[in-house]
Length: 119
Image (tube, helix red, strand yellow):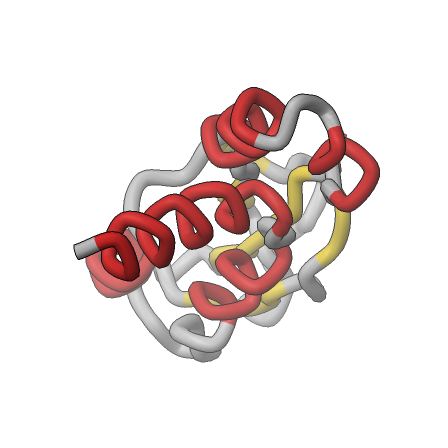
């Protein structure tokens, strides 16, 4: 029984030490060029921001709308600080990570940016 509590406590403390980058990369791999709005939303979820991209002309190859996704693990990071009395703060990656998805006039994915830090 003591081993179970120790393992659970260790897992809880370590959750804040992980970076949000791996979560963002996992969702990034789900996006493929040619997917529709509906397919992207079901694969990744609701975007953090959406906005039009003006000045793209009539080209079918250029994106006209952009969806922005980003992830952070603030809850896990706060638990790490509380449970390790501040020692975990030295190991935390405090950046949010994410990527952008650009859609063409036909509603299909045209561009997917690389995963990177978001502010």
